[in-house]
Structure formats: C-alpha cells, structure tokens
Image (cartoon, rainbow, N blue to C red):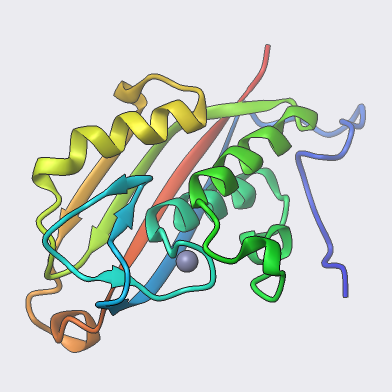
Length: 178
Ligand SMILES: [Zn+2]
C-alpha cells in the first residue's frame, strides 16, 4: 500500500512557508556473520566480521539513506529498495545512497551535512574514519568537511555488547536551494 508522503516533493503553495533547512534521522542494525567482509560507508573494514543482509548490509549507508529520505519526506529505504527484489541482492549500498541523493533533485533541496554514529564493540572505526568520510562525501556530492563519522561501544551491554551485530544512527540536513 503506498504510504502518504509529505513535504518537500510537493510544489510550494503561496501561503505555506518553505523551511530553509530540513532534518532527517535514520537507524539501521545488522547481525554479524563470518561469511562476509565488513563494509561500512562503502569502505572495507578489517578486524571484525561482516554483516548479514540482503544487500551488502552496509549499515552506515542504510541509516544515512533513510535520514536523507526522511528529511525530504520521500519515504524510506525499504520502499525504494525492497529486500524481496533480487536486483538488490548483495547490492553495493553506496548506490542506494546515491539514488536517495538523486531523488532530491525534484524537491528543491540539497544535502547540507550529515552526522553518523556507529555503535559496536568491534571494529575500532578510528583508523577508517577518514576513508569512510571521503567515500560518503563523494556519494553525497558534498565536501568531506560536512560528513561526520563517529564510533562508540555499547559498554558491553545487550546484543551489541555481546558482539551479535552493530547499529548505526544517522542525521542529515537538507538545505533549500536558492
Ligand atoms: Zn541495513
């Protein structure tokens, strides 16, 4: 059933003030599997198991894609890339992020900045942070200065603490084009 969509994709009406900035949040989580390499933000990250999923299970790209679609009022990643579609099997999730950015073209907004937090006991993201920022920046079409990537542990608590998988939270702002 098609979901109600609101906001940026509609033409502005005279009485409605168009906000200069919109904000969206995205969340994603995946279970670890030893059968795949770990890909985060389009970057191969050694030192931890990979992630189970229909696509390449890149949790950073998925959370960020949802943050951008959410900010634009354009639905979510599951609508854009159904996981029962064989075309999306093992798909490079950077392509999903790029598609979300392309979908903004009709809305009158551009990506402003993004901020990502990965919550995992392993791997340590520090050594890979800059590479991930640059890969995401290229996909988003913005400078890497406007891409923030942070990592933290869950202090050993719960499913993340037991190393069953990892989670990612992302926030994106969209700026109205002048
Ligand atoms: Zn995902």
